Length: 99
Image: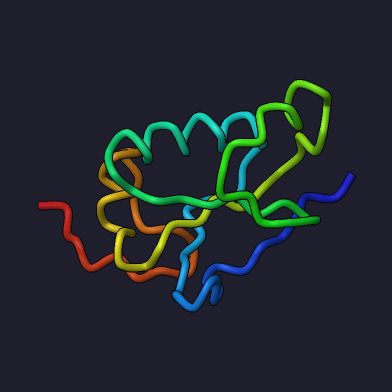
């Protein structure tokens, strides 16, 4: 089975979105809840579609559960990374220094 590959940066609904990570659907949906709770908008990209809302019925009925790309608007990237306790995503420069 091949791992899904998603672009690091995409134009979606007229804005630049940055991929935070590629991860299994259930984990991505959990991260989306954390982001939403912190006021960060996110979207999941499956090999078939973009999903702004959590399609619970798709999850319950065994819809696509493989790897998805989790994206946030570029303007909210720093907030998203802080909420998730992550460093810069792949392909993103990390200007922060560890002193």
